[in-house]
Image (cartoon, rainbow, N blue to C red; front, side, top):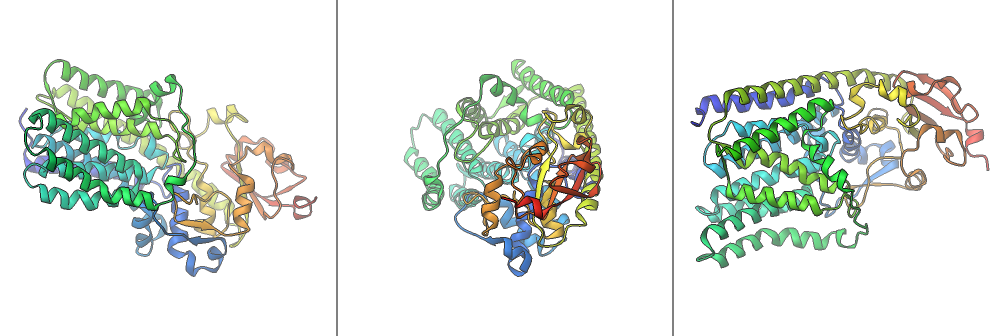
Length: 509
């Protein structure tokens, strides 16, 4: 298969990037689960010290934290652009970084451009991105870029490779530890491939020294951070869950379409390999094997990191396009993949546009919230109203059923400068601290309770809160009288309802 002409190639890359960015123009607050919470933190970091209301609730807490990618990127952007435009710009950067990193890795591995590598657009909007794991996705992309530089120059210009990858590894530590682990995996795969090819006859000591040089600064940073002292037992999923999570790179909003995409991509890759019409980069093949092995043995949770094992599957999704080079890509297959990408992006755009109705509902309700207010948040959960959730808009769930709307109350802070008890402020992950007594109030709540728990004063303590925000309000059949002994309805919409907390009752002994 002849390589594409440079002009056509770059036009295709530009078109892919524009298609991936298009959904961001359709919605003010994209439906990525954790994204509104992250944006609220950026608002606190950018404007909180000078805002007397926000400064009462929160304080910056910068330090050696391996989860600062979007914080370091976003705070300056918020001083240049309106908040929601800056937020979408951050998402755009996060979406494109692994896509372009995958393309760069493929080019470095094979020494030429590949149409197949552009297929990574099919996994750009994957489960972890749609869950709002922005630092992880950014770290994955940076790892692919750095591994591409190592592949391109390690053998021919080793000092250039070290000059890029050594500081890049330090930057990856501050972006996300999984990105650093992926870089180690990709570089290790390259060195193992070299060792197999040369049998280590010459230069082995220098190769080992170079790899060690890459790891010196990240290891020192890890030792200086609070991570070594962190507790947290490893939690392992069932074998059935392991198998089902192999769909994660293709998870979007319509399950049949996601399954079709996964089957076609995996089937095409396997068919090309078995027919001998596909090259596998030595380093990429080793990386695929290592990623699959680590996925099989990795826990689902460890030291505060959730969905740990599923993140290896996302790397696998990108490596399917970065590590393979079809010698001849059949035109019918290429056309099918293009149409599949167009269908996925059209569905995603339509679903994201649908989110605007929920945002409008939420804004109309929280318009009554005064700056400095304390707002408790609850939601109607699927187990409480299955019929309602079966008919709920697709923008509120991934195709696997995971909810994506529960962090939207972060708009209380972003747009109303009010406090709610769920801002991400883990000392090992976020550079922000919740002040007292608000920290104790948040600890008292723990996680967001189901809305029926609010009816019981023994289950949910509303003392200290001015108002309560109910999400997915249409799932509560009698909103006007919901917990009426403790709450008074102030504003109502299909997505959210706002209640005043009866102070004479909330703090009664």
